[in-house]
Image: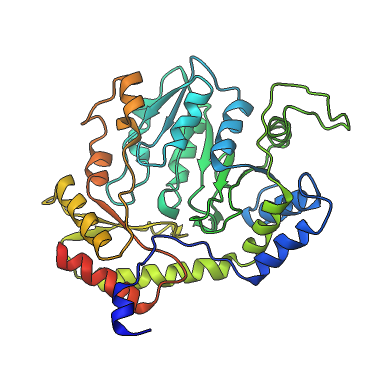
Length: 377
């Protein structure tokens, strides 16, 4: 590839890390008679539970489905409140609306970008039933103080680890730190099943109820047309599970490659005073999902958007992560949320730029991204 071709090549924001092993695993299932509810489902669940250090894992069709089922499993519904972060993908709050409960947003820490445990106490009411901390961009939330508060108030903790597979907090795996945890396997995640998700827990009753709910409310018996409760088709096929198993065996390799890319970015941008980067807490073993920089406070949203447009014009995919959930149009319309409600989240959201992060990035790609970014600042 010539220098000119390298310069003009479009650099994608994300790419699934697929090898011949994944392709063979999927085609092996396609050659079998068991495309769904076959042996790969139980095998994937067992493998995943072992990685997370939990007794049970329940595979489902998405991380959103996993959150929804846990809302149901813990009997959260109308009249209840659930605390979560405004700085996340919208599903971590939508699951609360799916069961008719009310989301209560707590602002984030300005450096780690996760929910701020010091602000939780003022948001708990007699209607609060649970807390959903989110492991933003792969950084596990500060779970010990969150668990302490939840324990004193008799609240459930549902850890949204959809972005943090392989991450650790004080040596403990992401997803294992609450009453239950969830993961997502969309193609831009650390591992993918195409589409898919997982629930992990040590609670046998919760796992059993989620298995029933994902399978149209069926019980544990043999009757295919016997339904014990209202359920959903949130199943994950053996095709998806086979892909997930092949990916999971390569997790350490995949995470190592992603860390190499992030380390290269951080090294190149370390002396750039016009941007800051997410601080990784000393207690956290990071599992990088997204690498984003934050413009300093001299920049406004319009400046950030101008920089995004420049990078895209140069063939560098990039994005703004995340729009504050409480300022999404239907949340504002339904609950009356307004700018200024979550000031730390809003200040961050207006200034973030997510840069390409995947295994295909070369050193020259990273140089090009950093050069174009710092040139346009």
